[in-house]
Length: 295
Ligand code: SF4
Ligand code: SF4
Ligand code: SF4
Ligand code: FES
Image 1: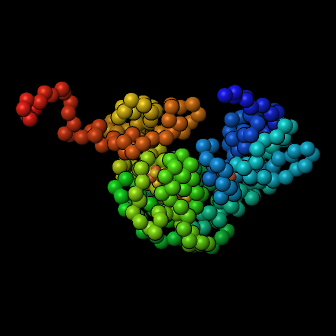
Image 2 (image 1 turned 180 degrees about the vertical axis):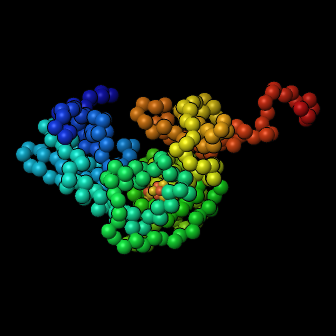
Image 3 (image 1 turned 180 degrees about the horizontal axis):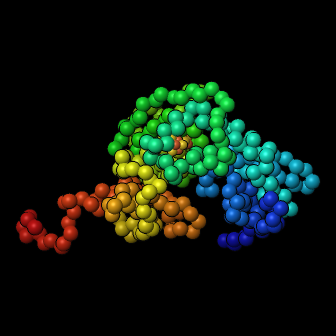
């Protein structure tokens, strides 16, 4: 099988010259060149979806200037991209304001606080107040299984969990339900979640709508110490991040960064949720021999 290398295309971002591989979407090209574009529904491992509409940029191609969603529009030779212009900021701010109409903003008690893309985007766009009438949801927290909590009041319907479950895991345990203001993600017929419990949906969620119950009430994630290490549950050796607080392992996450580990930020149920055994009092700490049924 022959592999065809992708051509590098010449582009400019805010007047500076860069190159980006052919087929790269503008948002990714900006990221690779050191520019952050606001976004809430993009993940480089998933197909573009354009749900949040907060990633608008200006691009001039073949003399034609237009505003495009940077998560879906691929770079082209000679494209002149401008990000964070007055016009794109105004558009992206308005879309973010609409997402925040329903969002509870309970950051002080949210698992995501400090590592929350929704917070970061609000900060990047310097959003000070919302011009729209606030209509908070009042859905109960769903704990239909011991590992993943659904707290849909914080969901912004970005679809990342649905797509990760389908495109990465091939499980399709989640989907969109209902229409309009009642739209929500969930399981078929609202059955209790019955899946592989890989936790990828938690990883990709840009809000605190999906929470890891194995580390419930653990405190502010932004204050945890992160240590990159290798999972020792099996011989694959996935790369993971152990998060510790005062020396205790609180949570396991995976690094979605480029070229980090063979697992590219994905974990299985044991790797992600199995950290309880590390500090378990009954854990065997020395070798034992079995003498007729007793150790
Ligand atoms: S999801 Fe983010 S913005 Fe929303 S309450 Fe949690 S920390 Fe705050
Ligand atoms: S834990 Fe994995 S399999 Fe289960 S819903 Fe989330 S992404 Fe799908
Ligand atoms: S639960 Fe999270 S990932 Fe899923 S649609 Fe809502 S905000 Fe997006
Ligand atoms: S990141 Fe482009 S529309 Fe959401």
